[in-house]
Image (cartoon, rainbow over the protein chains, first blue to last red):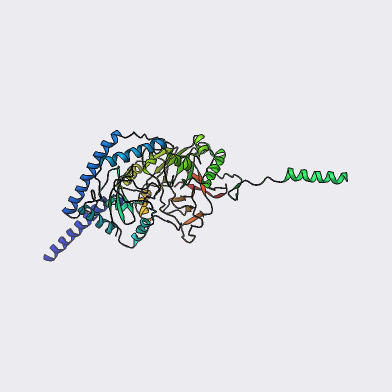
Length: 200
Length: 293
C-alpha cells in the first residue's frame, strides 16, 4: 500500500516537472524573445530605476524635439544633416550637467555586468567576443553628451543578449566599444552614458 | 613602283579598317560582352542586388555603369541594398559621392532602391528619400508574388524578432525573401558565418518557410549550398572587395567569387527564381534557378 502511494506521488511529481518544462519551453521558444533574468528584489529595483531614468530622458527628448526641424520619411541629405545637428545640440543644451554613471548607476551596472558575464561565457561565445573586439571604433571618444564618431563602425548587438538586458524604447540603443558599453540616442548618436569594462 | 604604292595604301587602309577597336577597359580589366542568362518572362518580378556599396570609389561607379548597361537588356524595376550603404561620413556630399552619383542613371530611369542598414550606416538613413525605408529600420514590401523583408541585423532586438514572427505568421505571398546585412552563413575569412544571428533567425525562417536570404557584410560573392532547404547568398562586394577572402575548404560553398566587385540580377516567374551574378567588368560569375518548394 505504502509502495503504491510512493509510486503515485513520484508520478505526480514527474508530471508536474514535465508540465512546467513544457510551459517554459513555450514561453521562450526563441532565445531572442526571452525575458531578462531578474533574480533578486535588488536587481528588480535596479532595472526599475533604470527604466524610470530612461522614461525621464524620453520625456525631455520629446520636449526638445518639438523645437527641432521635422524630418519626413523621404528627406534629402541636407534635411537629415540639419535635423541631426539640431537634435544633437538641443539634447546637449538640455542636459548641461550630463555625466557618466547617470543611467548606469552602480546597482544597474552590476546587474548588466552579471548579465553580460553569463551571456558571454562558454566556448560558443568566443566568436561573439572576437566579433565585438574586431569592430573598428577608432576615433570614438567616450564622452558623455557628445556624438559617437560618424566614421566609426557600429558593433552588432547580439540578439540573445538584447533580450536579457533592460528593454529600451526605440529612441535609444546599447552599443559596445571594445569592452565598454554605451547607451546612445539612436537618431543623434549622442552618447548618454558609458559603462567602462562592461564586458568580461 | 606605282603597284607597290597601291599595295602599301591598300595594306594601311585595311589595317585601319579591320583592326579591332581596343576592348573597353575598366581599370585594367577588359569588359566582357553583355550576356543575359535570365529568361525575361512576361509579368515576372525583376530586380537587382548590391551590397557594401558606399565606398565612393571609381570601382563602385564602374559597377553602377555596368548595372545600367544590363538594365537596357533586363529592365529591373528595383534594387535591394544589403547595407553598408555609406562608409565614413554621411554629409550631403557623401550621399552624392557614395550613392546618388554612382547610380544616377538608374535613379533617372525610375529604378527604386530599397536599403537595409549595415554596421557602417547611421540610423537616419531610414529617412533618406532614395532608400525607400519609410522611416523604419525593418520593413517589408510586396512585388507580385514575392514579399521582401528588410531586417536590421545590427540590432535584432525583441521587438523586431516579434514583428518578424507576427508578420510571417500571416504572410500570404508565395515567395518569402529576406535581406539584411550580416550573413548567417558565409565562407569568408574576415567575418564568416554569424552564428549568434543564425541562432535567432534561422528557426523563424524554417518555421515560416522562408525561401531565399540575401546578405552582405563579407566583401565577396558567395552562393551557399542550401541550408535546411533555404538558399543563402552573400553579395557584399558592390563597392568594396576583399580579394582571396573565401575559405574554399568551408564545405558550405556552392559557388563563390572574390576577384572583383559584382552585382546580381534576379527574376521571379511563378515557382521559379532565376539569378545571375555579374562582375564589375560584365562577366557572368554565377547563374541558375531556384524552384520554390
